[in-house]
Length: 529
Image (cartoon, one colour):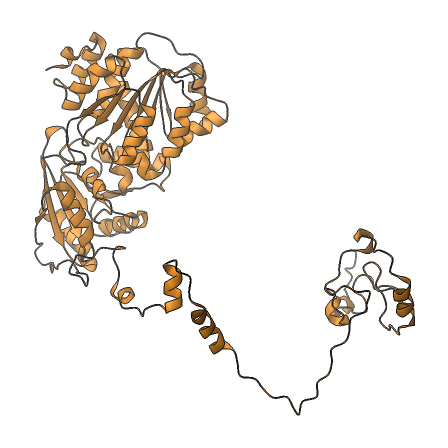
């Protein structure tokens, strides 16, 4: 089957032929006719199978008739990362060059002014990341009531990055009568729930088992100590015929550390991770795409959807924590039927992660040994299983002393017995002490008119004044017998009224009787010239 058999127009077919494609991929062959019919699509296919062209080509054909209005885009494509959004924009430029369709790219790290100017002119295709799209919507710069085609791309990646609440809000702002195209590389239960909420009677298309790598990628794994990983990577880079490669790390700071190590040993490499500014990320990808550098040290921001031609090798410097990320990483090579190689450097504590990856793949990854590098094996738990970072119980935790009976009963939800509660309390009470030879002095009795909460010690009470008398409620008049008793009492403590005591001497102002020493020092007077 050719692209001409899918119902595309002459302009799109000419653009596809100019790009060098003659036959559609399985996902394109099944998705394009359904999209042209106007039905919702739920597409699931492994990375590198051409999902982007599966919705860009029919969208160009659908949007060819019509005109966009200011601030009201006719179609919306939501991408999880800036790099994916920019790549989709490039595909529209390539496949839509024979159509007069306007397009706007809304991503973070770019100028608001230029993006607002494009929206004011009216766009047919709006490609955006969730954060920047909501930001412009809240500023009143965009209206989403005219969107007729919605595309949610890499939905599983959005779930991992925490964008699903933003996506749900964006979908609530769209008109209910629309065509929705939902694409994902994996189909977890959460993704299925979102698809059921967003789609209406969709056509489900799945061309490969979820989270399965391409068969053209040779996979290898070696187990070395953590301190030998960098040397092992350098030996692999020297031994293999590496045309260009992507080296993945789990953490952003490890990306910078590994980059400095490779540059120190004479390798031409650049780094890419999410903390870099957008112009730096774009410049880095351009240098790598054009062949100016061979090695790209990256985090998982480069593991999804990036279509870089002829990547010969992928190196996992760290074993990915999630098994699905392994498939996306090695999917950067072996794309469009080409061959590729992947090498994973595992440490002794990565046993559980490797086991999860092999369980997902349905087979074991080929082991190999690097010359002059001491091999090792995965560490084992007490129960004989493989141990992984951050999973399972450590020996120290497993050997801890048992909890007391009262604490265990509370943890199980049973009400402890009274004896269990009184026992620790009785043990904590000190023995009584005899005070036969000690003179006991009674504490001063507070005045009858003072509440029990007011301190009677003059020095202790000075910094803790109650609210002013004007703000206090007027007390009720006391009975006559209580007034007579109060008048006959020798109350030597002066009563307070307001902030200061009502004594014969005026209340101190400023510093009172204390003058700091620095105020007594003579100040030299500068002579006028």
